[in-house]
Image (cartoon, rainbow, N blue to C red; front, side, top):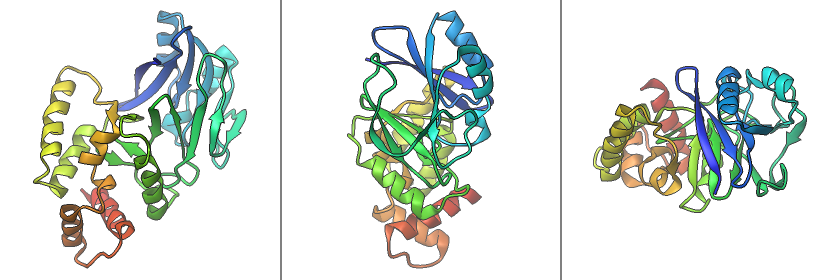
Length: 256
């Protein structure tokens, strides 16, 4: 089993370290800062072997230069985005091999938050960057709402036991919005309680599971009657398709 650690960065970012089950070999995911990563690697005598990048936003890439100067490791990231020091441009693939210590990684194209966003899936674990959050999803930067909708639908089709490791601690705030959209959803009510306990203990609310997201994340529930009715009330018009519901839901969250 992979050993996955959260390295907090900035106010609410998580940089993920993926350690192989039988060695000190470690993959770094979305290092927006270098110092906390170097500190953790040094403390635990971990051997970094690669950097994985989901998209080009500065809080996911600003630590790359310092890290590769220190460790001289490859950088994997989306070929359609401006990633510093990128050595391995990626498109969707079922089999990205880092080394023999890690099972092959599936790279999934998930445009929407940004036009070239990708995510990484291995061993029933998803590193979702800013596409899928705990109880939420990313804002639209230079992608489109329709792209993001279909990207999330791809992720919703992964095995339900998939663990979701996103890049931000947004769950509490997202759940306030989710409860506004679905005030009668008992799964959201329970998740609010569970998340509060974790955060009071200064523990991450991440990872979640896909099962939990499907039950509590309104952006994955655009075909549900209560969500449709709430979004139609917000938008003031009848919405025919799930894409329309999603688009208006994202606008609502942007103003929330």
